[in-house]
Each structure stands twice: as structure tokens, then as C-alpha cells.
Length: 232
Image (tube, helix red, strand yellow):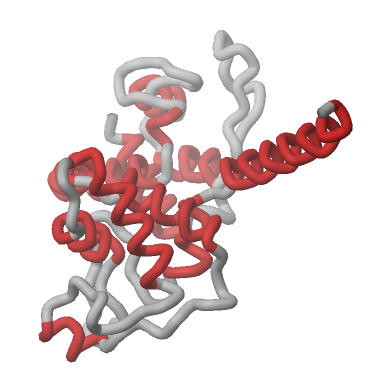
């Protein structure tokens, strides 16, 4: 009996390594790498006249809606198993697409050799965690709020400026109110600070450093953000 223990231990270790490796797969990155050439990954999705395949959100919603399952808890596991089979062995008879969609897009080509079963597992898990009605509603609400904002504020939100600053409240850095007052509402000076960053200009912020954004934001957008801050 004991002579089998080393083998059993090795198998357990190998199994653990495989499980750990699977858990380390990044479903989002794999989706971007393996699927974005044909599928639009945005949430809410964008559609294009010459698109090669339906948006990924539509794929996720459609599979989950139509996958046969005896109860709700079985849907996602069954949907992932479907993806793992269909991506490697696609066919019109397996597809949940309606006839019009199949005529428009055709049956996807087999991805055998391009993606592994473990990678498809990670992709499927991410798809059904990310493409949900709850996340779609939140994304649509954010889009609606952004449309109502002044362009400068909209750009500031999109560039993550509000992660360190708030309009009337200090955060990691000073509020936009304080910045506008400090620079006497001169947007050109604020623009330089955004482009080049700054260090040591502000006290009481625990040595926080303003990073340079010249390589991340266009000159025009920087001007728009600076002008909006200057008006605060």
C-alpha cells in the first residue's frame, strides 16, 4: 500500500498545479486576445455595418437564454460547456442563432488549435460574469450620466481624474475648487500641470504626486479638461 503513496502524492500535486494554473487564467485578457478580432466586446455593445460576428454581449445573452437547463443554477455551467464544444466543433445545427443571423454572419470557423479547453473555460466564466443585465443597466446609466455632463467633466471621468480629485472635496489630491483657486482660474497653467505632472506644489497631501498625462491625453482634450477645472 505504501509504495503507491509517492505516486498518489505526485498526482495530487500535479492536479493542484493544473487547478492553480486554470485559476490563474485571465478570462478578460483571453477574450480580448482570442475573440475581439471578430466580436465587439463593448458593454453596451457597438454594432458595425461590416462586422464579422455578433457582439459578445448578444452571444452571452443568447446562449444563456436558450441553453436547456432544468433550473437557473445550471444555466451558466451548461452554457460554458456549450462554448467549450461549439468553439472547437461549430455547426449550424448546434447554433442557437436565428436563421437571419446565420445568413448574415455564417457559422463561425473552428478555433481548434487556437484556444485550449482551459482557456475556453476561463473565457466562458468571464463572459457570464461580465455580460449580465445588471452590468448592462449600470453601463447604460453611466452613459446617460456622461451625456448630460459638460464635455470637460465627461473627459475627466473617462480619464480617471476623479479617482484622485473631486469637484468640492479633497481626495488623494486637492479638489478642483482648490486647483482653480490656486491657479487663479488660469486654464493654461492647469493644462501644463496635467501635461507635465507636478511634485511638491501642494502641502497636506502626504507627498502625493500628480503624474504626467501628456502621452495619455490629446492636447485638445487636455485643454478642454483644464478649462472645465478652471471654471470650478
